[in-house]
Image (cartoon, rainbow, N blue to C red; front, side):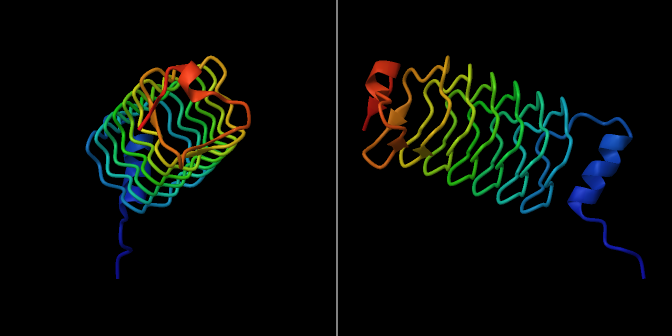
Amino acid sequence: MSAKITPVVELHRQIKSGIRDFAGISVRGGNLRGARLRGLDLSGADLRGADLAHASLYQLNLFRADLKFANLSCAHLHRANLQESDLRLATLSETRLWQADLGAANLRGANLIRAVLTGADLGYTDLRGATLLEADLRFANLVGSLFDRTTLFSSGFQPEQAGMHEV
């Protein structure tokens, strides 16, 4: 009886063979915990519910990726492209998103507790219902981003002064 090849196993095999373009791949619910993925194209990928905790995801292209319910806690996404990605209800606690581009991403209900967003572009993101307690937003662009009364910020943070809009 042959072993079943999962999408995660196949993904790792293809990465080792030098393939970098995985646009549109489905790894829904996959276990990529602690994975080291660098410079891959995962644009439009289906990563709903995937476990990417503690993963090193440097310079990934996740443009329009579906990351609903994904666990990205403690992951490193330095300079990742997450433009227009769907991160609703995703866990991004203690995630490092230095200089990441999250422009127009949907982060409704996302957990960003203690996330490091230094220099990140969060312009025009939807942060309604998101939790950003103790998040590091130094030098982050939040212009045009949406928040509501259920969005939680650290004490003293003034979203309107950062260019955000309450809806």
